[in-house]
Image (cartoon, rainbow over all chains, first blue to last red; front, top):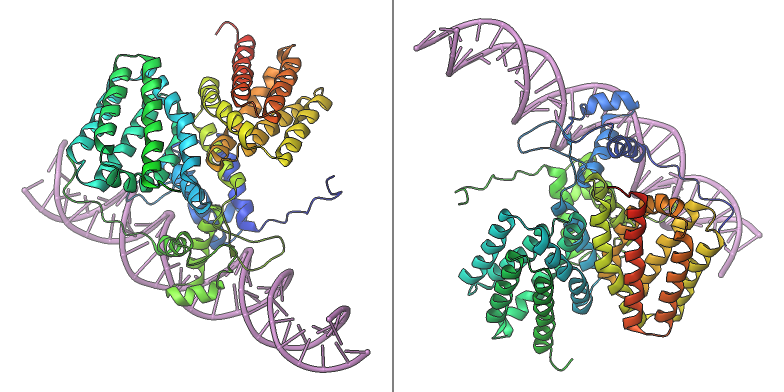
Length: 237
Length: 237
DNA sequence: AATAATAGGACTGTCCGACAATTGTGCCAC
DNA sequence: GTGGCACAATTGTCGGACAGTCCTATTATT
């Protein structure tokens, strides 16, 4: 079973300081927007050296719990932005050598759901963003990297339009993984550009008309297409 | 449109150092398991002070790119473990005040997919884990916190059995959010325990028999039940 | 009076040097 | 080869220091 004793964790001071501050933030004692005391002040309060405090706040800054707006000196409490979070997750996934199939299955689970909810909850702003991504793809489809970015932006826009932060945050890391795969696919499959363009149009239209099932279905077909394209690129494997 | 000039980013030294090291890790120049040079050595190489290096490696340590096994002094390159990643994401979500509905929709997207793939790819080990979680729930269903943990373990086991790291890593943060919601639900809905137990049994059975569609369906019903239970608890809203 | 310039004060980013505690290592005895 | 021991290397933490930048209140200017 389990050991009789837990290894006693004698965390270094910088970690304890970090935990203490994190506790206050998560417990909302320190609220979003509040400015953190100065480093020297914290050092005094915790009774540790300023260097130690700095290592601690570095942790929280990385996790997105603390941040500062450009050109501002003092740190304030912030809510982790999806961008910061998702980049960490996608890097983790990249380091774990995820396969295209794994990515595809995850997209197949999330994107149609996102599209469905987007069709229910999208606002005018969302439609604008969706169309912007779609038009970017049409405009720059010759420039492959830009086109890939446009596809990613499209998925991001759908996820945001879903009005569901959990889905959006779960979906975000997938985009970073999708980009490199798409880069090859889009160049090596002749019909890819036309199919993507058509799919996006159908999806946006369904979302616009609030046809939830249709949005889901078109999105499913769209994602399925990626797999077909990928198989074409790697035919024989 | 966009501004003519980007704000020039004059990243502080510790961030540049962190990026430089991260680059080597992601680019596999530094490979998993390799020991990092000592702090003093890094300071010399980068031409900065050791304190600066320390702030930099703190970043990477937090992100799970560096770590050390208990009682080891030197840092080594590690691959981010899902536990570390997911805790960050769930905290972010918690700070964003996600609603039960958002969580539920995300589960509704991910868990049935996980169950379906689990039915295809599960190994004997996975079945053992699934049954362990199931039995824990049966055994300790009177002890609410333990029961909740057992439910979480069950979902985790399904996600792992799916053989899809992306789905597993996307699903992990949801568990931390599910727990508190479940804590109330399980106590206030009389039939909750029996229904969860039955659902788990059906799901495990389908996974065991490799009935993919059945696994998905039972999981869907299982998740739907959570929503019904939640509505019972908050009836009137 | 309204606005612009300026002088301090407060902080952050970075550096230097230091020391105890702990871990890694090479050498020696057995 | 194994165990043990002394010594080197390394980390965690501390104190102090200083330049550059931001904030603020005061002073000078129109």
